Image (cartoon, helix red, strand yellow):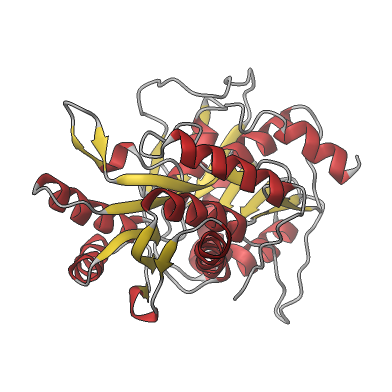
Amino acid sequence: MDKKKFLTQILSGVLSLSILVGCGANTAPETTSKFNRLDTDLKVGMVVGSGTIDDRSFNQGSWEGITATVKNSKYVIPAGETESDYLVSIGNLTDAGYNFIVTPGFYFESAIFNAQAKYPNTHFVILDGAPVDQDGNTVIAENTVSIHFAEHEAGFIAGVAAAVEIQEGDFGFIGGMQIPAVVRFEAGFTQGIEYANAHLGTQVTLDEVNVVYQGTFGDKAAGQQIAAQMYDRGVKVIFTAAGGTGMGAITEAKSRANQGEKVWVIGVDSDQYLDGVYDEATNASVVLTSAIKYVDQATHDMIAAEVEGNFPGGQDITFSIENDGVGLPAENPNLSEKTLETVNKVYEQVKNKEIVVNESL
């Protein structure tokens, strides 16, 4: 099937919108989902490589896309974070009959290279990465699909939205590990601020001291400490591309909001508005908006393609603004209508290539 046609089909609805050691089953209560659960007995497994399953971000979004799509699902938390640990977890899943496996993160690249050959009857989806051999060459077998996201475009739109809404002042950025996906978020965010300053009348700064990579995706305490330091320096908005570490920044912002301070966070990967609610009576949240990667849509679409007999093995697919694979949440209570009008225009300009966002600074 033609890749462009395939992408159009799978993405058309995106924005109109235990015997296994260390594993978890899909035991969460039924919730309203934008996906219809498929009538299939397909067993889908997921290996968690870094962070936690409930990181309110990349891992959780990937997992929720799975559990909303199939009834038979299981995740595995490996004993460690080495290629050998990942391969053991993959082997445990395949032994238990999970022959469709999702691995969210670049750290699975070498493990999936070996697994796709060792388990030719298993289909693999690697998010934010591609299988690489010992020489660093990308080798995507017919039983594997690689999914990437245009994080720089999501970061750009979030940067524009925040700058237009706040108008002036200091912004900050907290990254987890300094990996390509997170660096692209930072690059896009920076370019979004620069674009707003140059074309939309804003006066926002993103100083080097307020760009910090903590080094992990699961240290909430460290994320809170870094955010506190930034807010103390007068930063008004912090974009967190740091998984569970970023939840610490949200915690700090909520604490300050409860004391009457006006500070904001930009969420990442999923819509984190509810995570930022500090006043349940009014549903007020410190999350200004979120830079979304539709990881739940990606996992859903790949599973649906498998069930329909159209698994796009051997392909590297990018979810971008062009195919509505990244962007802002459908609802943004903290953004004004005027801001959203401006952001929608800029979004269309990026989609039409009138604005080109670079992957790096």
